[in-house]
Image (tube, rainbow, N blue to C red; front, side):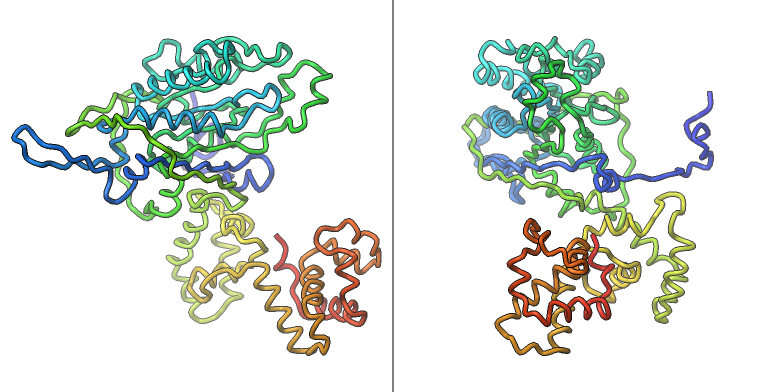
Length: 480
């Protein structure tokens, strides 16, 4: 049989095309998560520089101290109250299935198989209280390598028949089991588009694992595909999946955004036992501690991840920075101020080459700025000639200040109205069209610039500002 590279026409090992998560989100094919960052008193201590400190007396009666960090959770540090709080918080805030109203299909990632077993027990007990008689301990199921037919479970979960069909709506095909609790089996290569919630009930330190796990929720889905009642379809207000929640109980997102060293040379990982499996159970290393006290939520916040994605998704841009900084031809031309030569060289010799397939459009997306960047701006930022990319509003403020300096409007009270008109005209194709065609009635329903806004602009400036912008302001830079 031909190997994968030869099959797809890249025997040299170089990919023929590169399409990132940012591309998929921007093009409307994939979705970014809504991150639910929840921390308890216990996890806050585990995550702190000091760690969770336990003081005790040894066999000789001497005072001793043991410190536990997040890496020890469910390995050397055990807290049943914390696990219960994780599950309670998850169930209270999880996205619901838009058709049945149940907890949306979810995947929870545990530390170990023993941890997964504990979480399944807790979730099923809580579900029996929340939904009496509905699930009968089939709400959550453990999907790890020690469970017989675990691989078939993953297939059944995708096909909406894991542990049978749900009994909420007879005309709606969705599985009875709502949550799969796994360790590593459903981390990579698993496709289940109608998953609405992912739970990180463990700390993650591998960027590859983090990317793969959050990727399980990025697929879009139309929930009406499994509803076989035309009358009911008319009643579903939001049948399409436009978001998914990523529950993060160990500040994993913050770690990969602020702390992880992406420039570090990584060591080869230790070989795992079974490919795609969960590996061996972690053995004890040092003293273990069971925290018997209760736990409470210390903070919880939700953040919708926009088109810019997370830092881990934007590393494409940082790789481009390294590429151009290490190119002697580019460095020499930049130092000489030969920008035409630099831009021509990058377009010919750097863009659309194997490995990363850099393009200006991809770099703009990765930079996550709310306007259109030029290649020169990107290169100036990389070489430290500008400190940062200015936002669209900052540039509009600068352009309006130039206008005021040139024309010195005497109507001081009208300056806010002039600025509003200037910004709207410069940044919106729709507003420019309305002004040019004089179809002012369209402003009555316009959210950017209304009829009242136009009336507040003195008559002479309604022509003067558009003419000035056409002559002196490069409009392309304000496009998204």
